[in-house]
Length: 173
Image 1 (cartoon, one colour):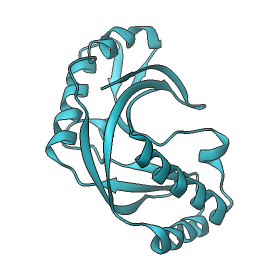
Image 2 (image 1 turned 180 degrees about the horizontal axis):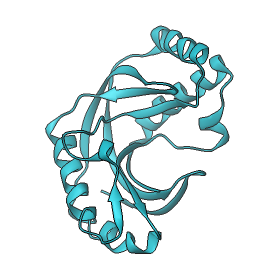
Image 3 (image 1 turned 60 degrees about the vertical axis):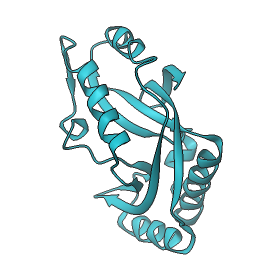
């Protein structure tokens, strides 16, 4: 599986990393920190035999996608074990989802996860993963004490391998 994700400006990265670190510290679950998963928002999840078939499509996005802005206003849970921060779905994110989907949907012998297709994508930044029921409750309590809504600038897009996270290609918007 390969991910197409966006990354944020330095200030937003510091905020997001602080939340990731806080949840790791409060819950004792260090999946995100031990696997060096950077703050990111996945736009698409693609199954492919090889990353090589995805590289030309990804490269075609360069110059086609602009920087944008998104407001993070809420926390949530993807049960059973993911805790996340959610932005408002705005025109920028809606268009971005469609652009990425259109570029990758026509590649033979690949499939895009149904959860990352236009009109079924839930934009989010994972703050904790592989959390137990108790750790989810602790993560929520930690964010209840520290979360303040903020606006982030989307400044980069990347193609990455997962488990462990490894950048394949990334460029500035």
